[in-house]
Each structure stands twice: as structure tokens, then as C-alpha cells.
Length: 245
Length: 357
Image (cartoon, rainbow over all chains, first blue to last red; front, side, top):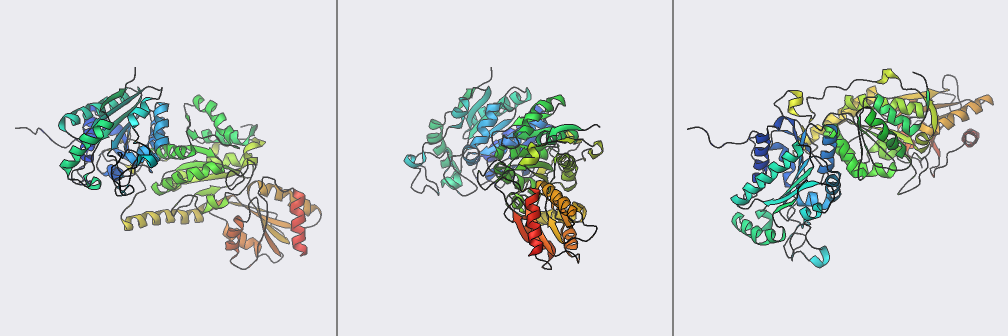
């Protein structure tokens, strides 16, 4: 009997440092599968964020750059402008992209830069230890919001897909989740679609993935999946928000 | 090639192209926006890349991303903009990527003014961003030298795998002078396949390249910093450039001055010579590495009674001059940096009063 399941070539065989139950690993795998299926590993450059995925360069087996906090879209712009033949993706968390990197992502999207952004939204700062993120839910506890996010002081969570979809520049904007197999399959399709638009030099492409962070949420992995489905999905609806003509 | 009359900012843009840099990212800021206005027209003629970024912060990282692919890349800015780019410059230095930054310095601190200044000396030579790094810093004294230093900057950035800065000022950026673009300063790019993220297919390799500045293991981080230090030490051995002016015979005082200010000092020295007063000058062309020995030796001449650092800053370069003199000579400061530039007469008057004191 032949081998029916194996590690994608675009993933390295390094062990990840991610916590048990974290869904980063699923996101990595989906991207790697897409890179393999499109046969582009030899001309792909990833840009790692600051945050839990800062060492993503260890887990993929393609060229990688490591950005400063929030600046990955500017680096990807630099790469793609000087080497349009390369396939470029950024991998960014919610603190990185929606807080300190808000300027860079908006302008890259608005210029219609032909790269792909994978946006990992787990509603909290992971690596720095559970501080409040722009996507933290009202009332959700964080180390810098110990009694829960007070929206009177900090405003409401930012919905990045909806925000980016307001731009008049054509783009592919989608949100999926990594909470159940049915969502994971849709997430894979969205990532593939995003890379295909890039390959066709069509538009900027952006896929938000609702992730969990059991460690900083203080939950078991299973409870984290359930909490995300009950609390994040209603506020961050899944689907395609924008497609190019 | 025949000389052409060009504005400094435009000449810097043209020099980058002649040096084989076909990638330019920038954000507008006075007094250097003409570089962008020149290159937006010129880059398409050579199939080059021009992009106006949304901020100097972003531009710094566009430079990083492009440089990490192994491509020659440049940005130009002015003081407040360079402050914003300093974060990226630190990352670029830590990740060891070649890139060229031009600072057409204006007065500061803060928004300061838009007239010429040398107030960014510390920022350029002592850091600017965080961490242990240096830039190789060259300071032109006019448009011709700005062209030559811009052309030299790209191979130097590649030799040391790090950022190089051209430290001009608003006068050099704005004034027009006849210039030529020496073909012999063009040096073909080095092969960067051993480190650049230029795609495995491009370099025919199955090994991925990673460009990063994160080293969580203290021993590995220390080693990266030692590698950088070794490069800066090599710069000190191989890249010090300076001009000695009127130092062959005896002189009663030594001026240390660079850039625009040194042009004025030369005229002052010529005028004083005509009146029978000999004054020498060391003009650093590289501010890092600094021509310490040249200054030390010139100040040691028996006839030399005074040493003065003449700067368009409030006593910045003087610290390096003091360091060069190793306590054997005193050095005094003469300068202003609101945007006005001393006349040759004002310089001569100061130097003569110094000698008389």
C-alpha cells in the first residue's frame, strides 16, 4: 500500500515551538500544501512577523525574511516590486497586523500589491504573553485588560476584512477559521485562491484565519475551539468579502 | 563624458542609476524631494523600479525587503524622515543586507527647519537606531563628490553587507554644479546566492536562505555582533577617506571640517594665505570610519598652535576630533546650525582671533 499522507515539501521537518492546541500549525500546513500544489516553492519568499510566528522561517522550506513588528507588508512590497517573478506571502498576527502594522497593511492593500497576506486572528497577543489586541472581544480578559476589554476606553474590536474591503482598489479578501475540519477545508480553498490571484498578477490577496490561543485564553484546547466558535465567529463572520472583477 | 549642469538631488538620483541601482523607494520631504521627482521619470527609461511609500517607516522596510533579495536599492530622505527609517536601518544592519541611504540633512531637532545643517552627525555616525551597529558614512562637499560617493556606496555596501549612508545637507541637495559621472566607478554587483532570499530556483539550489536579525541564543547573537564589529574594524583599516588641505608646509592652526562647511573653510584658508597666514585643514570624507590618525598627526605639527572643529552643528564632530587627539591637544568648537552658513570672512575672523588668543 502506498503512502497516502505525508508532510508537504514546503514544510520543514523542524518541531514547532507552538503551544499544545494552538492552530498555527494548521495554518502553516495549509500554506505549505498550497505552495506544493502550485509548484512554486523554488520561487516563494515568505515574510515572518513579530509574534508567535516570528520563527515561521524555521518551519517552511522556502526562502524567508523576518520583519519588524507590523512591517511585513512593506517588506513584501519591496520584494515584489524588485522581483515580480517571486511569489510572496506575509504571515501576521493580530497585534502585528491590526495594531502596529495597520498603516503598512492598508497601504499595501490599497496599492494593490501583488502578494498574499495570511492574517492569524486569535484575539490576543500571544508571544508577549496575553495582552489585549485590537481584535480582543468586549469583556475578554487579557493581561492588560484584567477585568475584560472595556470598549468605553478601548473601542470595539477591529474587523480587518471588512475594513480592507472598503478600499476601492480591487483585491481578494476572505475570512475563514481553523476550528473544525469543515472550516479548515474552506480555509485551504481561500489560501489557494489567494495564491492563484497572486500568480495571475491579479490583485492583493488577504486571508484572515480565526485561530485559538488556549494558553493565553486560559482554556483547554477543546474549550478554546468552542469559545472561538461561540464568540469569535458571530463577530467575525466567515466568507469572501471581496473578489476582483 | 562631458560635464553637465545638475542640481545635487538630481545628480544623486542619476548617480544611483549609473551605479547599477535600478530600485528606488522614497517618501517626500524637503529639501530632497527632487531626487524622487527626477527618478520617477528616469527609472522607467531603464526598466527600473520607482515607488513612493506611505511613510519613511514603510520605505525603510521596502528597502529591507528589496535588499534582502540581493538587489541594489536606495532611498533618499532628510533628517526627520531618517529618524523614522532608523528602525529599519537597525534591522538591515542586524540582518546584514547591503543598502544605500542618503540623508540630505536639514536643521533640527524636531521639525527644525528646511535649511542646511550638519545636526545629524551623531545619528549617522553613532547609531540612530537601536543596537550595536554602524553605518559606513560618507560626506560629500559638493555635487561632484555626491555623485562619486553615491556610485561608490553600492559596492561598499556589498563589500561589507550593510547599510551605507551619504550624509549631505540641504545646500548640496539644492545647488547646481557641473558634474560628470565617472564610468570607472561602476562596479558590477557581487553574487549574493549564499545569503539572499532571491528564490531557490534563481540560484539553482535546494537550500533555503533566511534573512533575519533575531538570535535568541545569546552566544549566537554575540557572534553576530562580533561579525559586525569585525566589519567595522575592517572599515577602519580600509575605508578611511579624507582630504588634507594646505598641510604640506607649516600652519598656525588646523581646521577640521566636512561637507558644505569645509568648502567655506577652504575659501577662508585661501584668503588668509593671501594675507600671509597659513592654516591647514583635514576634511573627513568618511565620518565613519573617522580619519583619527590624519587629524592626530596634522595637529601634532610643531607650528600648529590651535585646533578647531568647524561644524554646522552644536559640537558633534568635535567629540571625534577630541578622541583623535588623544588628549595631546585641545580642540575648540565653532559652529551654527539654524540653517545659515558662515561666510569665509566669519571663519577667517574666528580663526585669527583664536590664534591671537
